[in-house]
Image (cartoon, rainbow, N blue to C red; front, side):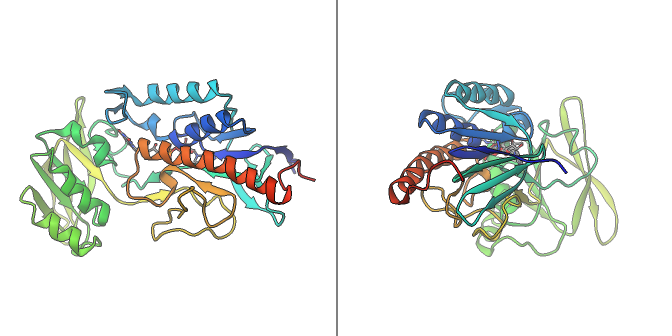
Length: 323
Ligand SMILES: Cc1cc2nc3c(=O)[nH]c(=O)nc-3n(C[C@H](O)[C@H](O)[C@H](O)COP(=O)(O)OP(=O)(O)OC[C@H]3O[C@@H](n4cnc5c(N)ncnc54)[C@H](O)[C@@H]3O)c2cc1C
């Protein structure tokens, strides 16, 4: 069995997407001994995004470029970013967190900022991966403006699908909402608003078994009626998929309050129901998931951690090397 090496820090940041990198920057400025553990290259979802046009201060920037700038900026303030996968976050009886990684390390601290983001649920059909970023999208706010005047397909039947279909009509000439069931799961009020929108067409009991295109991007979605099995092509410039989103919260051992979607609920300091565990970015229960909201959360979390550790020190001198 691999022997775990205990590494002591003031704060451990899990994930180096926009939230994690921003938390690392503020932890560095706050003179905290911090480590950021990232399983891949720093940048998170920025690395899956072609062009970003809504991050204030950058009229248009490539996702990878913004990721690089954020990483360099965090490192300038002393961010220590290690490449490893966090397997488990456990709060021990003495209040210390033990963060265990795939490489056999055990990082210990009295505060953890979880910024592990989440993953949009994929349809898993031919063309989805191939045209991701070239017409296939999982984020209407992020990509809607790239489809002015085009006919779009939205796939899904929950709140996100119905709300985003409505949102996309401000850019698209027409939106076809394709749902695999007869009834929508979306709340009644969202359904009423969307179905009253003359730019939205609804196709029920239908799945999308394939997304097709050419070198320029998506050209059509293949539709299959679930009752008859009949297939047809829907000519569209883009396919927005809202089949769900899984926040990466399974790393935490023990109960932490979360909403119906599994997103972590925090107070206004970004602390979860588990004392010392903070959450920021896409992993957190909130209305909007954008780069701006991720870095906003992270700023609050890192500054709150500084105060939290200070308060522990003042009340009972708990912040000291772990015995
Ligand atoms: C296709 C797409 C396009 C988008 N376009 C835009 C846009 O134009 N504008 C905008 O504002 N927002 C956009 N967004 C949303 C934006 O990217 C997210 O809101 C933002 O990245 C959230 O930041 P985050 O740090 O919370 O999470 P993420 O960016 O998801 O970062 C989480 C990080 O945690 C790491 N991680 C996860 N689990 C572990 C583990 N066990 N161990 C170690 N590391 C782990 C991941 O590897 C990842 O690097 C887009 C999202 C997508 C999917």
